[in-house]
Amino acid sequence: MGPNGAGKTTTINAMVGLAKITSGSIRIFGNDNQTQWREARRLIGVAPQEYNFDRYLSIRDILIFQAGYYGLRGPAVSRRADDLLERFGLASKARVDYMKLSGGMKRRLTLARAMMHEPRLLILDEPTAGVDVELRLELWDWLRRLNAEGLTIFLTTHYLEEAEELCRTIAIVRAGKIVTQKPTSELIADGATLQNVFLELTRA
Image (cartoon, rainbow, N blue to C red; front, side, top):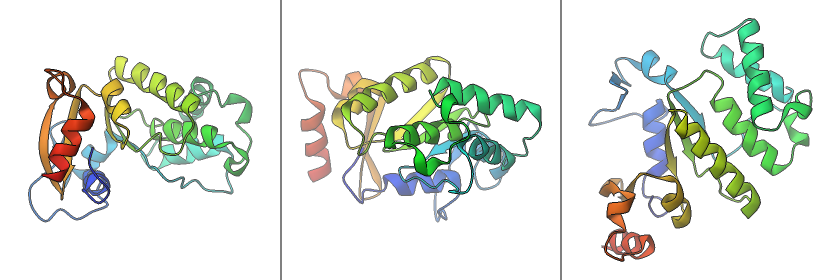
């Protein structure tokens, strides 16, 4: 969490290799993302805030095409795509191009694409920004299920309620630095509210 410009998206870009690291290091399950970048990136699935699908592909083909980036192909990939479309309630739209999907369906497709290569870490950049309350609750439910199955989830959010509901640990970032990182229950202990803690730390 952090105000606009705090460095949340930059952190994600550094993790996945889209931003050059000038100091420090990042390890993904023990793999240095500079010297062991193939191993590190294979473990990460990213669901960006903005939609960046190929407008000329059906949503099923979008998933299959995504798998190709990781060297995956063949019948197993097709089955994986069909399984994910079913899981995220998109099976009936498999042959439709993404431009014809509702906003909620596009958000679900973003999650499905990020899961195609079965990552161990799912990175979500403001996953519920701009969605309605019903879809937000639906997305929360999917994320809880994925996490319960053993998937580690790293997300950025501006919604304090979302952080309280979903996160076991919260880091608050200001000007590119983590000003606090604690278990959620500890951060809001002793009657404190996350809103007050957030405002105090980001304005200090």
